[in-house]
Amino acid sequence: MKYLYKSPAKVNLFLNILRKRADGYHDIQSIFQLINLNDELVFKTRSDDSINFKCNIKSLEKDNLIIKAINSYKEMSGIKDIGLDIFLKKNIPIGSGLGGGSSNAATTLLALNEIYDYKIKPSSLYKIGLSLGSDVPFFLNAKNAWIEGKGDVITEIFLKPVWFIMIFGKHNVSTSDIYSMLELPSKPSYYSYDDYINDNSQNDFEEIVFNKYPSIKKSHDILSNIGNARMSGTGGTIFASFDSLERAKSAISSVPRNQKAFLISSL
Image 1 (spheres, one colour):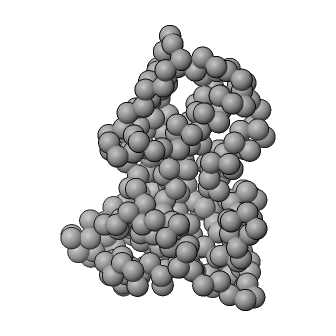
Image 2: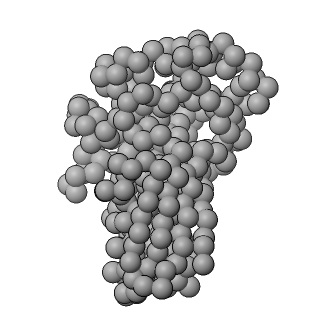
Image 3: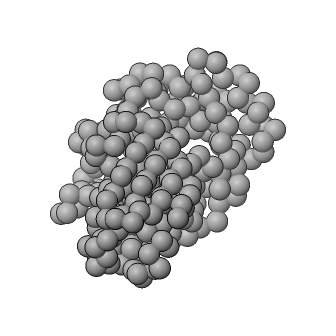
């Protein structure tokens, strides 16, 4: 039997890094908004216990969170005879700060639980997700949210529908590399929701990424001329939001073609 799933991306509307934790992660504050940009995952059950994973980007077949998610699911569920042909069509750019890998892992866990008759309860899926990556629980929940802790404190919030102009960076930005370059403040500053509403928030990684990748800074400068430009995650996607498709279409017409800007709606 064949199962098809969409694996959505997200944007960080801001990203505040508070401190490094004893477990090696960082405490953060952020708002994650889901967007209508999806990878596609196809699962086809097999009669044996082999896992055959293919992707339209061959380099992703060697080391992928999808396989780690399957192994973790097998261990917790006790199901030994999981056999699947899996195909991942990657549409979310790699290293773009849009959470594609974490989304793929979450989608895989949700798919396995459906295919194998919900053997694992949601709270246990959440634990597996968190062991795979700090953004995975958000994608398991699949709702726009205010995020705290290391990504495990999730508060659902309402965000009005918007259209984003997005410029994807030319670089596969390494999250671990960017985090290693961050200088943490001795006393963290906390954001409130009012800070976000009043545009008193930012992405703490922007200066680091802009210094390392001038082309990403250039995209930010260009979008800043037509809207409130932000960077998502640790880069390198630059985006600006608009409250109507008409305004977004008008704004994108002024973006130079070599920037390869896209219109993408929120979810």
